Image (tube, rainbow, N blue to C red; front, side, top):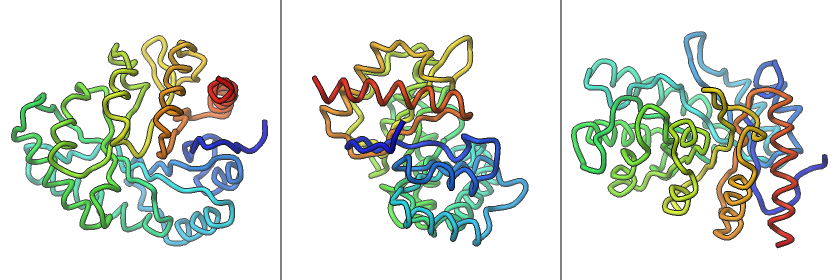
Length: 260
């Protein structure tokens, strides 16, 4: 397996090897085109400036970009005002702490229950929170709102219609919900800055792409090729074996797509 040399911007998470972020990036640099810096929780402190500086140096040296995944438990659309304000402040601090790597996108989970395709209070609260994050990030388009398993992806579309936010389309989350991913991607890929690929089986996602129907994976990659998707395609598998097994599958199918 050599360095990826096609037009596909293939990415990895910052946790493939059982080690901290900097050792992971050092081992993945030169192989992937983007690394998803996972800042899932900050109970033990924010990433220090020395970490951000070293990641920025590695990105410049090897030519990869970064996406930053903001903490998972942000209550950005919560009814509770204190919880919402605390989450916004946490997210702003993470954005400030990771700005040195000049992220391609900040991936955002909006927890809580959406309100379907009708603009409602949940959307108002989410929009206000995203606006506050954009002040720190510098541009709403850098915020890639991700579809999550807790509610249908359709709950996010009103936000994308009213705000110039981007999307992070997670195929594994759609599969976990029993959804067909291809129609969702066909309709919304143009607004996405990131696409997450991982398998789903036996009630668990973030598995190797060997768990995904290979015909479906081929269709998804054909859509990426046909649309000349310029965003990042992240294999979101946390572990050496599932990540590199998935890499090999994508590499083989991508060659087939190009040959076709």
